[in-house]
Image 1: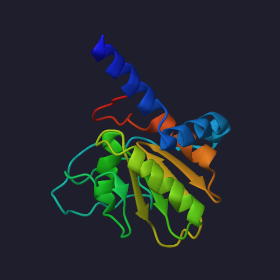
Image 2 (image 1 turned 30 degrees about the vertical axis):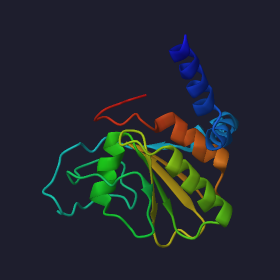
Image 3 (image 1 turned 135 degrees about the vertical axis):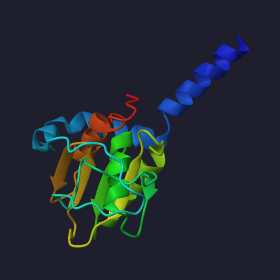
Length: 171
């Protein structure tokens, strides 16, 4: 009985954490944003030699040959190698690019990266010069460009594609 009580309390705590409560209503409100998601052909999952550069056909690659080491989930203040970011996508992570976002935007992205930090369903937030306030979200073969950040659209994208990479789908 005590174990059941601990499990129930733990589940209620997890489901009602402030950051989770703040994230989930956005996913319901942003469903229409999925119509703006672009899908690209799968360019493969080949590993290249560690440190080797790959000539991607996009500034925001969504698949293709990549480094054997992924970028770990979290918030970065320096650009990361695209070859490692593509490997993160293969794992089911979401990569979110920013340049000069509003304070509220960066606060939301940091909160989400802290909330979703698992190696197979995390969020990687990285800078990309030249975007201004634009935000770009990528998943394996998927991309959503937001000229203005919409927490609803971004949360819907994250919820739809996080944890669904081809290497080890966990959702």
